[in-house]
Image (cartoon, rainbow, N blue to C red):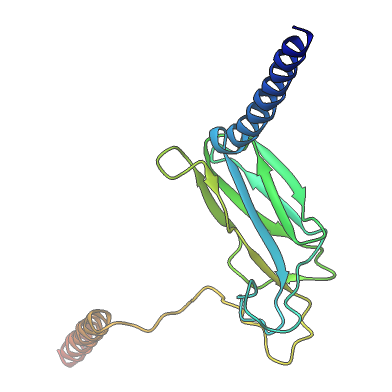
Length: 189
């Protein structure tokens, strides 16, 4: 009888521990999946091409301590984190939003060579867990030139614009010619 009580008590204790472990794992998974989660990493860009994660290029290593800013689509929530020693970051309990994720490295050390900011749609139809929001930064010590994309200004005129210019020029010259002819006629009278 004592043996049965011990076995029953042991089984009850084991069941309680198992339920506790399963409940904890489910709660952790629920925290990341049910309320939104955004992850990514920041790596050194050795050649300035804006691609630095899993490239096989020597020296493209994780960067610790880079500030990552998260701004919700309504701009009511702003969260700032820094990357861990392995270059990764993660925003748990993000909540549903179209998050703007911006890498803000120390400007005296690094500049961002990849697309910045990135946008993470933490929405039920897009997925509440968003991963792979990675940034590349460089200190400018690589052998090449940085790829800098500036806005285009003064774009070349198109064919339609050329026609309008020519018609306007001919019309203007016609007015000047008519004005000169009328002035000459007035002086000759």
